[in-house]
Length: 417
Image (tube, rainbow, N blue to C red; front, side, top):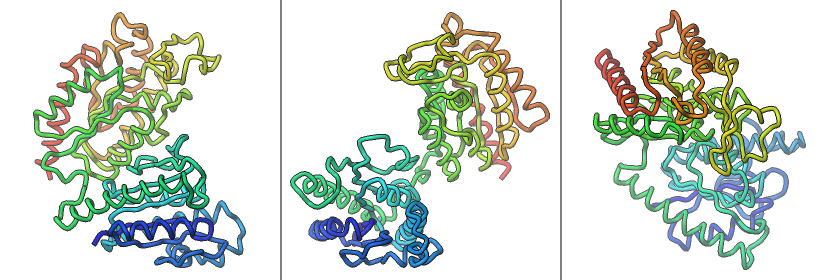
């Protein structure tokens, strides 16, 4: 039996959820309807009523209503929806989830979806889906579908959109349920090859590609994460789940964005999860010679004299200076000192990116030296090992050496277990 969970506010979207339920039943799947409404009365009956959702969040619906704080109530019901969906999945009653909504409904449902394992079908139809959806998707595999019009009744526009959503989630859920019956549900890290996470940017592609090819030859499956802010957060999330045999973190430009106000920061926890989890990690300093901003015309005035380079129409970069490189060296060292697992740092002495290699516009040995010196001082006396290479980061020999070092660390850890 295939079960699709519908999660939403049945006081404001009850008619629409009733329509979705009927369509899903006609599509040949069973439905579990979860009510996350708070104030008004539900317009259709729920399989999991709102008071049960509130209790799953550790409170009572009456308390949320009495408080009359909509923001807090939405957050609480999102927490209850998360607990409810995790329970249904653990019970084998969730093979896919579908939700519809505006900003509030999307916030509630998306939080619940993000808690589910990667590979579980998740479809969110939202009036917010044509803008920045990163707060809703995060580092999960939620599929966002734009509702075109606000979700207020079934009409000549919303009807076809929602009908497509029904067929999409029904098909995905059937495939997931079939895989579950065959005891092979999509589950990361369960393949024959151990997983390696690698970080990459356009300006470090050649070096990372060489490392990826070497690791593939050694028997690993390499997942490459683009250091776009979201990419780094995803790498950290998945590393924290313990699915990687090792992490090859050669590109750290998100740390420079975090320090200098760039647009592609992954937040302060970047370069932390592998160390906390005790996963072997080989780290380098790729693209710490630059900070990423938006289009050229959006550049802050304070950086216009900082070696501006137009990377593409959407991204403009500036060169990090000696003071910033010193602080970046300190931050990298502090994060790696705290690592619970084997840690190595590979330092490419001749350049950190295509722009920073000899002859490139960002080749600045003084700034690079400030980074290396602060890193060495910060790692002194720690368990992390530091290795210098007289090459730039995109030399294929550097990538292969970093890959071999990670392979040796993984093997040594396995032998000691």
